[in-house]
Image 1 (cartoon, rainbow, N blue to C red):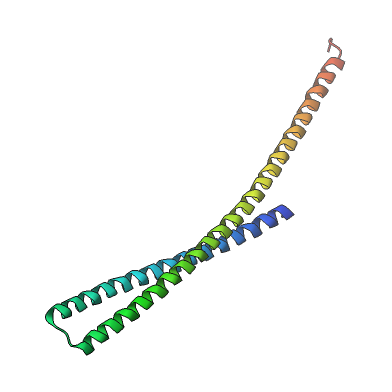
Image 2: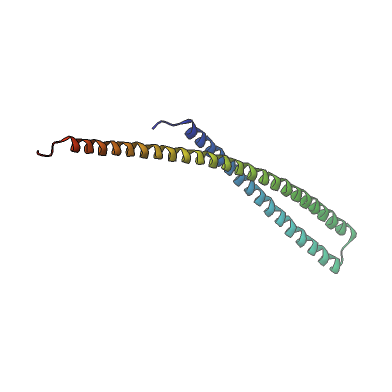
Length: 151
């Protein structure tokens, strides 16, 4: 069976949708990784802040206090960067999601056209079969009426 232009368009749309889906899945994985990194940084910062509280309670020299504060500030900066990276990645996920949906709609449109074409072809075939059946019935009827009744 030869491929029609619609078959080719449908196949190209399916490939584009699949590629968009793979991109979306990759973007979602990246977002999940950033979330995991962000949670890890938040836990580490909380642990380090708890250590500082313990050190303050037990007594701490000014140099150590300064080191704790500098390190907490660097963790805060890393958290801010991770939050910003997450926002940007979520935007990429949203764009990928919209692109995948667009490709899915295009594929669905081609599938609908192919389905309509197949329905039209089935109906045309049914009409041909009905005409052939009608012709056979008519020929039999005519032959039956043309044969003398004495034979």
